[in-house]
Length: 472
Image 1: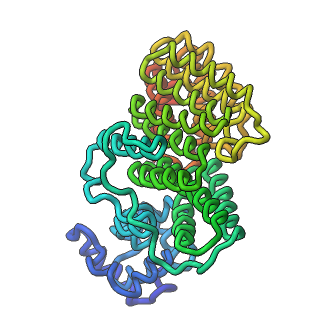
Image 2: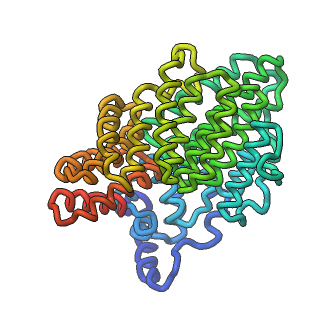
């Protein structure tokens, strides 16, 4: 195997490496990543070239496999030229080898963040999460209401777009290209998760931001503001889905500013809804509710019943997490009423995702939260979640996984262990094909309920499978 890629000299270096690997904390020389040939290979993500250069540094195939979590046969295939494209594999290789992620353009190290979003407030990384939430809330209030309602907003979210060459003048065709790319990438996010496409979203954003410096008519520039706001919103959502919360917050803040510049109230409402969802996920329903309420102001200003329905449903979720059953149920009712009045054909593109299926999904989600304290709510959650699961197709694989997990949890709560385990197994099947940290987090309640019922063989099998899923 080694002879085909370097003959006896390489085989000798394998032997030397094997003899010394026990004494070395890391077999890769510290300066290896700084050499020009290596930097070029990393920048273009030519992993076969990276591995060949590591061999020249005396790093064996066995050591590369151990550091990257790959088999030796996989390493051998890559050395022979097999390309590595998957985001999660690239990040695992970078982290395992000790490569600074920015050298490969992966995720958000400091250099990548400055290139794409602009320099962040120097204190942001030091701040407590609750302080960061407060800052964003103050910023959102200023954007939505034009006043510092929740205290002064300090610092900036972006020092300006990347200073790279841009077209001298742009037209509607250029803006439509941004919009088309955003639609395509959003479809990938829905189907495969943020981990599959986030890197592409950030790269697209880096290119799109350049056009802010270009000349164009007022109409073109306003549409560009909205297009880039939507792309920033998608970057925030995919960052959230991969667990990069600070990056998500920065993108959503920029999305708010651009949506406001484009005078698009529905999009402002949509961005606030999405950031509120981040805070729900962080178990901070009070802060989430404030963002949903600000979004409600923008939704009502837009005159979009569909946007109002989205915000009401998410306010209900926040109240459910706070234990306020009465307000949660009341807001679910209002969400259904607003949805019934909405003109779906004329709805803004930012809220068209909220279909009748999503109404059922939100009803089921809110009652699932309430069922954790009062199992009576399973009788409302199960029919709604069943309807949502039946209606979601493969293009909405992540949402379907959320609903399957919640449905299985409800069946376990009501004592239908066999059926709950069967549905839970389907949820794991779906989850295994999605690159999303959020999916893993949302399935934790199912794991907890399955573990509690280990005396049942089906529940025990489900718990074991979930444990394997999380360990992978």
